[in-house]
Amino acid sequence: MKTQDTQRRMLAAAVAAALALGTAASAFAQASDTTGGTTTDTTSAGNANGGGLPQVQQQGDVSYTSGGVGLDESKALQAAQSQWPLSLRFTGPGADFLADVAVKVVDAHGADVLNTKSRGPYMLVKLRPGHYTVHATYKDLEQSKAVSVTGKGTARTAFYWNTQ
Image (cartoon, rainbow, N blue to C red; front, side):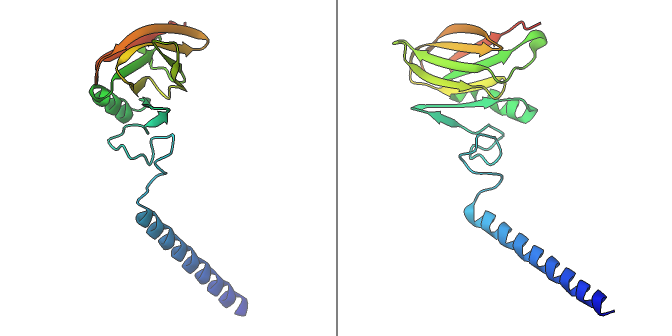
């Protein structure tokens, strides 16, 4: 009988400790104004962009975001295209969306301004106005396209790979 009472008290103490820890963690999350991650995440969870837009990344003075694997993220990226100077789309056979496309943007002087990998079929890039070449590589198959950026939402290009 004494053993059962001791076990009950230990269980009650453990439950109380777990509840206290949960309450403290919740209070910390509210105080830090962060939910789902930090604003430096490379995922879309916890980003400060809202509306389903994936986290905006920075490379030098170039900002970019990519994704679109899920429907909400895809719609958010499509809706945001008009606010970004360069919009890229990556597809395969049957209009299949592609991810993990290596993307390199080179300026008119041959300098790399962006060198990254796409997290999905859409990539939005904030570049200064000018002439650029976009090199996109999927499964060791590279394509290059020249683009002219003149302002927000002005340059859009699509890459297609027939990988069958």
